[in-house]
Length: 233
Ligand SMILES: O=C(O)[C@H](CS(=O)(=O)O)OP(=O)(O)O
Ligand SMILES: [Mg+2]
Image (tube, rainbow, N blue to C red; front, side):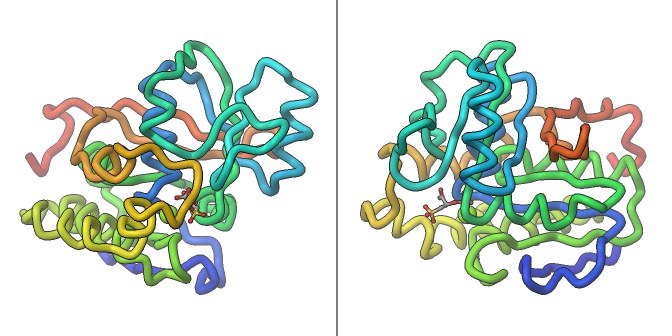
């Protein structure tokens, strides 16, 4: 498998297969939203679009990164989200990096959104699809965020069927600038457990696929194929 690792600004053409990685915290939060029962997540282009969608559908749950804000129901924190019942709800998510990365590859034929909590499920979806070429979008810090790059490299290794020492990749994420900023309170809308929750390898058994639905980019959980269907195992 040919794996490319690009920042959002480096995406010059729509890849065929894209894995958009945001460990801290958008796609850890998204996985927790599905674990809490959310039906789907609409990835909003802007804060204004998120608020407009919420105004049209007051039953939707609007979520943004940073501090709480009027009109939004919650923030981009797995530690806070895990105590909210989202059964059957639609979440609208707008963040600085993760949602922007997914929207940047909306023309790709397959878009997976990923973090460590869904790493193996994501790798297994790539293996089953037998993708020759995969573009990993490293969403944080102009493609330099080491928590995202480490996760992308780990998934790439697993997708290629190679063994990988997960501890080494998780350590890089734990030592990243994002982890330090979350721990030190530099970032806002944070629960004390957020960093630990973002470093839980394979916490969930599903992958997450984003696709255009009526001009909105919609993220849904995706069951992974059974072991019997995965020839590399
Ligand atoms: O919520 C996050 O951790 C970041 C935004 S910030 O760096 O905290 O302002 O957003 P994400 O898109 O999840 O990286
Ligand atoms: Mg991030």
